[in-house]
Length: 130
Image (cartoon, rainbow, N blue to C red; front, side, top):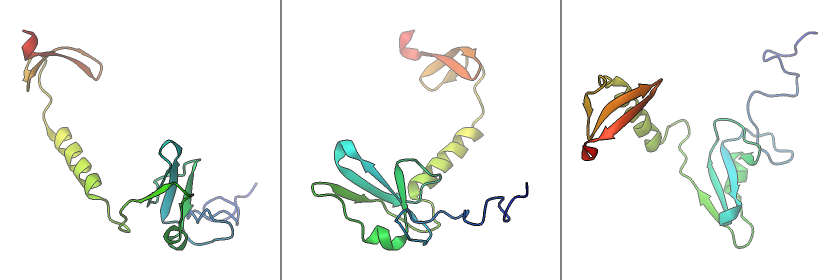
């Protein structure tokens, strides 16, 4: 059996995610999620992967989005191609944490002392418990 197209999918399947609105072929740039418990519709940047209960929208449909009566629409900030400040801060913190040398067993770590280890987990005893 031969695979169709450069991606191995048939000719009707595109590797680019398109708008969820019927008959719209524009590329999706936003993801819409409903939070039913809070009567809120959240519109944010395109999610990293497809979620079953989320809707991908193009810029035009995202701009014209309205919510049901009594619901609130929350529009998260979006800058095309640029990670948010929170993303950059989280990445910087992860790099700093990975660069720190691991304390030797029994060596004080801040307010606690490591008293045991099981795989990647550590058992810490607080200095207040002494």
